[in-house]
Image (cartoon, rainbow, N blue to C red):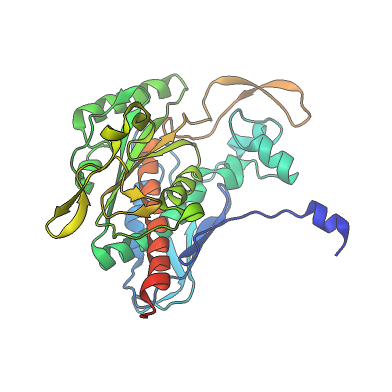
Length: 374
């Protein structure tokens, strides 16, 4: 092999998972996006409508606080499903794009958008798709949501496992703590997907207010998973919380992850923070859950609880100082259609990535510890 080929090779990792493995593909303004899922068990009942339900929660244009881009995001199953059952071979899903307006991004061909991937992609690869951010666009997450819908169904059928994410904060508006596991209907009751109705109303108004000034805000999503079996996760490098953190921080606009007590746990003493064990109806349980359902990197059977922080949307409709591809200082007036706050549509994406992590670790646990009887 020539030395130059090694020096200039470009490897782009686009896959996630070890046994339940997904590879997403497509760009923001390309003809389609999609995902290939390898490792899905055979004979799983599956229809396009089941996948579509989650895609509808993610799609643009669903409310007056999201991007007005109009996409139906209809999923097409290209392989891996026959007569309503998975066959065990790779499942290929495609979602066509129909409402691209690439002309709004002509200025971005030469100018770098602040806090976007334009500069880093250009520097790393020497070439980039400037239309809507190309591969760095949140439109890539469609494939994750489609795959996550399948993972979610496996988990639900296997153990009644439920995953529920919801918005707890938009800008400086914080919802009261949710002491009980909210229903899907409660989360979906408002466009901001905060189950506390009074807080949700204030969040919606804040998003509308900042949008009217061409600005944006960020927020926090909390995610909970219940009926999780004991034993998911591996020691050291593949700890369950580590893989959850990687999954969440791989999402566009994420800037923070915490599980259980998180950063607030630093304010407690060990005597306050430890989760005492008890016998609850014949099984080992903990009286508190500061651990967030994970101890030693392995699930302990309690609810998994974590939070993900999302930054304000980087594209704002205000003039911003920047530089162009030649390094010359200039000004950028962004156009296009963007969410003034990404968290409402990110709720289902967080759920999808959670399902993908949990189903992969469940399969790994079964393969290592349950398949062979010694």
